[in-house]
Image (tube, helix red, strand yellow):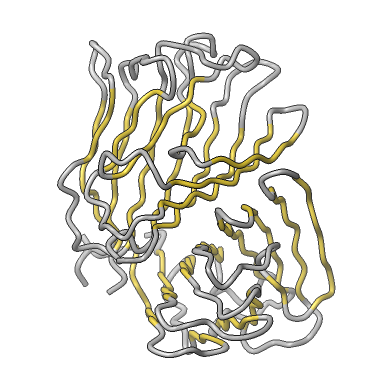
Length: 162
Length: 174
């Protein structure tokens, strides 16, 4: 039985870095899943660039809970998109799981669904849109300020529907 | 290419019910764990929704957990936090018959020496006015490798009912 859930690449930072990039992503899968356990050097969130696109073609809607308050938030025509609603503190242990559906077609705009979890800050779910029909070939995660510290892990999986 | 999304173990509760579902001696050969639960208990803890709640602990340790969660019940949304072992809504006695709650739990880097962050998405759908959808961010502040996971009813000692299932998957990053 061939594997249908395949690790494409994984990065564990040996030293601090402001960003992590997955490039030359094969178009042979159906969906992508990005799993991250970032360690931030300072209170920060994560920006997402798709195909190095810095034009205002991103939008997103969040549902979030702080642990004491719940709400929803939306941005449109933004660049890049900050995928987590909360800043993550330097001593926090967050995780991020982002699903990119049907990423390799050249016909539709690209959507993603993300979950951001930080037991010290809150939990959120985000639905995002990149208004481009291009196949996704590169994903870059970048801190809004500071670095990802050593020990941060980022893994990109490819999922095949058949 | 070897499999990198592998079923470690699966439990289906039989006709006598079960006080708990436990995965033990979990291999450290994987990178992440993914647990899928379909559950119904023979009790209803929450009077409004009829939901029961399932508690999850690691390595039989009941301390050093923290949670922030977001709950929708069909008429409103709220967010809360606590330092209890994580729990999630399941179907209970007073919910629509033949209906089980659905939960997915992702645990990245369960074998590291860092604290363990957990992502939980859960529902206890029932054909009634009130049911729960929950998003939960949990943390187990413990450097130990997760070698066992125990699921049990939160407060009343109720049993899992027949046909409840839990499947544990291991995911390798290389």
